[in-house]
Length: 324
Image (spheres, rainbow, N blue to C red):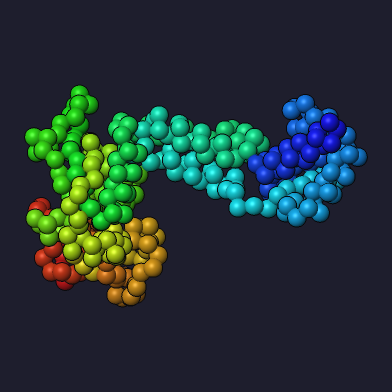
């Protein structure tokens, strides 16, 4: 009987260290003894010292260190660190397309991966700040079916809707199904988008996943052009503003040096940048000619302008757009 209790104790210690210790947060001797006591297993310091030496010799990857002159232990493993879990939890909170209920469920699942001590720290340090969550509870089911369609190289269909001032769904095309050739799912500006290839317009068209209803995987295979784009989706998702549908084109932008940080934030840091003069820089990027692009550009006033292509302007006049 005593032998069985000792085996159970060793297993519980390993389990505790697996979930509640790390190199940055090792479990001290007193913390291990308190944990064993909480589950009805008594253990003194001398016995625990022998137990820990046995476990370290067993090849389980248990490491020993000191915390304020007290022995402490941790297991090196591939579990998510406290910082990694914190980042994932914040990302879930920031994502508008995840509903409040789904957000709570996901956060609980992530915290469950943390173990008791890290879970307590995460709970204390989690701030609930996003009040702009959407309401489509089918979002996860939509994503799963779209992923299946992309994997099987099949078309995907759905109803597409907007919300009116009463928060009611208003379906487009008189609630006729959209049948699309999916290329990729893209997370952008706190929302999830389905990038598709339109056979009708011979262009990529984007749809908000949280605005889809009754998503289904079709039996029809993707068209050849969609298959080509599926192999290189970054070409159609990099350097695009807010996934707004519009004509894709290359532009040369000229801007003041002090806007370089804003340019990096929008287009990424792997840009070829050349000097226009002592105070001006130029880049060539791919954009979608759409209201979000013009809105982004207009915020900089005369500090940024379009150099090429000549005559590229919105349907209103403003002096920062020039082709010289």
